[in-house]
Length: 117
Image 1 (tube, helix red, strand yellow):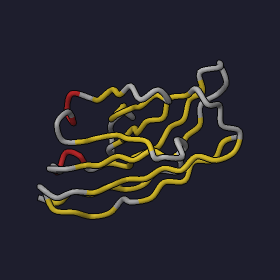
Image 2: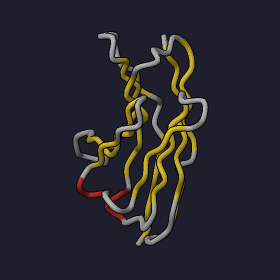
Image 3: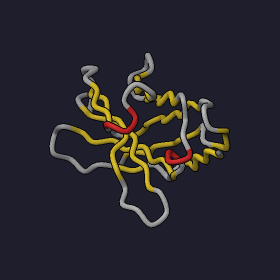
Image 4: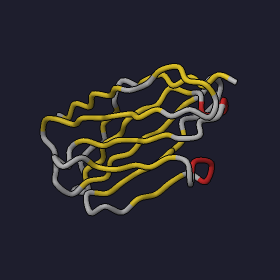
C-alpha cells in the first residue's frame, strides 16, 4: 500500500502562484513516476505534469512555461509550482504515484485550487 498526502491548494487571484506538495509513504518502489492530475467540474481528469524517479518530466501543453514539477531530496515528495495562474486552472488537483514494476497506481485525496478572475 502507498499513501499520498497532498497540501498547498487554496484560493488565489489570476496571475498569482501556488505550490502543491505531495508526500508518498508506504511500499514505495524506487523506480516510479509521480504526477499531478486535475479535474474541473463536468470535465474528465487530465494530466497536468509528471516526473519520473530519474528526473524526466512531462507537461500538459496548457501549463508549459507556467508550472514546474520537481522532486524533493527524499525523492518520495513531489511539488508542483504553479505560476501565472488562470481561472481555467481551477480544479481539484490529485497526486498520483505509479511504480514501474507493474504494480498498481495510487491517488491522493485531492486538493482544491481556485483561481479568481
